[in-house]
Image 1 (cartoon, rainbow, N blue to C red):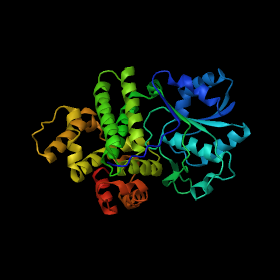
Image 2: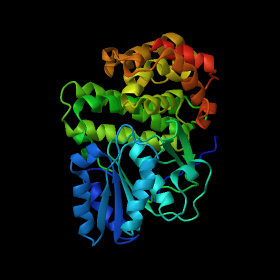
Image 3: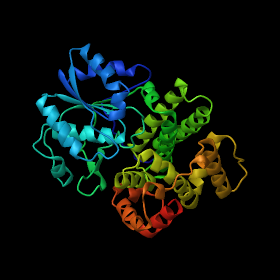
Length: 381
């Protein structure tokens, strides 16, 4: 039997109105909180809602919301300074992957003398603040890992940094929060969740438990995408997407994502483009890679799709699975190219080399060289 190591925060609250439990968790750590969020989430009124809930238990909060598409680690220093001035006793992160990473960085550095640059250059904080996590789109592949994604302001390089086994004390998955995301953007969010689930499923570190979780996530995403064409405002769609994000993150606590996830982070940081759009462009080459290096795994997705004949050879079944996925999530309608965001042919070698610096790339089912990655990128340039 495979060894299974499952690391998750102390508590996970999931479901409608789960956010109402945030005050009873926050008060365990203090009476003053810093909410770290992004501009669009702030505009949607979510932090105000959280502040009102916190006040019901006597917890006051101040908000740092200066996070946007081009934000780098400088935001950690700005938010940590605000936290120190406000004498914050805990940090609450509200938003997507970048915001959660910055919020975790603030929790790590507020009680420390380290700057963000000193931290990413190898410094280790000895005292950290507790953190509560509120993912608004439920698609953070590192939510249950001791890793955060940070963008170096000196060169806009994107890297993963260890939190030294410091995790959020509690995570709150409330499906309704994603209803603030525009419907077009939300469809890309769902595609990115699918990419994370497929890459985790292909990972050599995946085990019987994580594979079950990834297959469940893939099934939920495919169903969600099909429903979105009918009514993207349906709360059930957001509930399915939230569940898919949760089980994918849970699966990724045991396995790693893949080169598609690395590419989306690196390219997004380099050219200041929304990561979800880059993920949608990259997803086709991830699917092609799966057919080429682990067709038997891709073929095993067939039963949850219900449209693939069992008697087909493995390779043909895998190709059929990918064709159905492309059709159901509307991938054929995604006509974007990386060059439209300003990426050039000359940029590809450095992007490909940066991918190989991510430790989870060693968990791919087949080795990818820099040359392999450059060829893949040329297909979507």
